[in-house]
Amino acid sequence: EDQVTQSPEALRLQEGESSSLNCSYTVSGLRGLFWYRQDPGKGPEFLFTLYSAGEEKEKERLKATLTKKESFLHITAPKPEDSATYLCAVQAAGAQKLVFGQGTRLTINP
Amino acid sequence: SAVISQKPSRDICQRGTSLTIQCQVDSQVTMMFWYRQQPGQSLTLIATANQGSEATYESGFVIDKFPISRPNLTFSTLTVSNMSPEDSSIYLCSVEGPGSYEQYFGPGTRLTVT
Image (cartoon, rainbow over all chains, first blue to last red; front, side, top):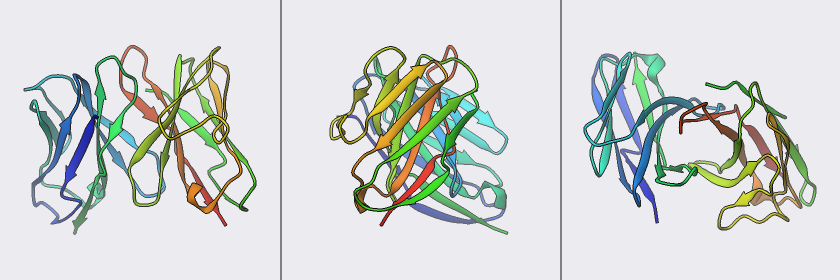
């Protein structure tokens, strides 16, 4: 069964304090790994797709990386507006279904 | 990406009643997906809806409880039937982006069953 585990569950940082969120996964053939941001009361907002080990993608203060067993979302010099829950999901080869992790609730204090 | 709207945005319903949630997309899409996000939990796929065919349900979800319609390539509905407090969740629809595997989500419908 495909599984996604995210850590930590919650993370508090000071503004400007860089850190990383982890997403460990097991999947029967990876089609893609997806990162989303979810603000309270809203639907998930798409951030990145990673398809193969070694791939990296960046957007503003966020950088996502992928290995064969895990993905990291690195946040550099975060700002309070980066506070949100970050969700990781995998899609198995031949499937459309996304399997989500529990998310990491990130809080950036000014 | 696609622009997705959902109606209603939230509702409070009584036990034993049914609620139909609408999902509208600004472009034609082959597949639409319905997810549930229970309080404090992550997203779980309920079913996949293709236009012109019966929806495909995930393990643990049945058509009698969550009937889905897909009358055209831009619209779908999910009905939550005979509701109980355990059905209190956020219900989200999503679509795949054109030519990609990325899924884009609507704003969600927050359902509370009393």
